[in-house]
Length: 81
Image (tube, rainbow, N blue to C red; front, side, top):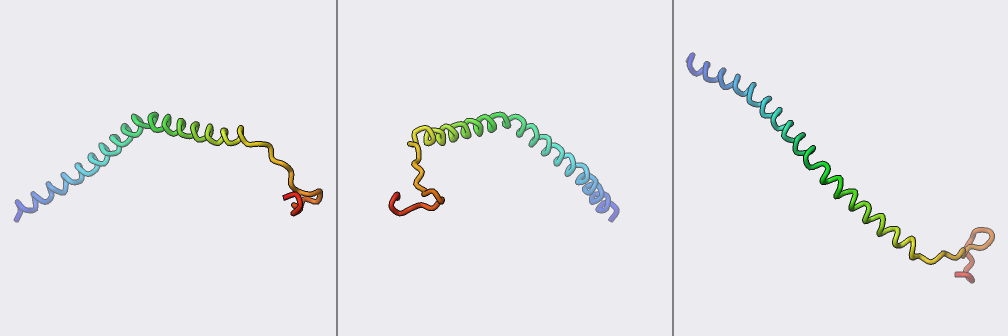
């Protein structure tokens, strides 16, 4: 019975060392992975945002000037529409 208790306490001690070390290594691995690929994702995002802004600007540049269709009091009259 003493040998089975020694085995379980050794296993419990191993768990108390393995789990925190595994968590620490996993956290460090995540930080390294994020820092390594962060610049790649940021440049792709800014390039995509820049393309979208150019797309929006193309509509603003080619749009003809709008006529003011409202009457003097601010309501639109059916004759002008």
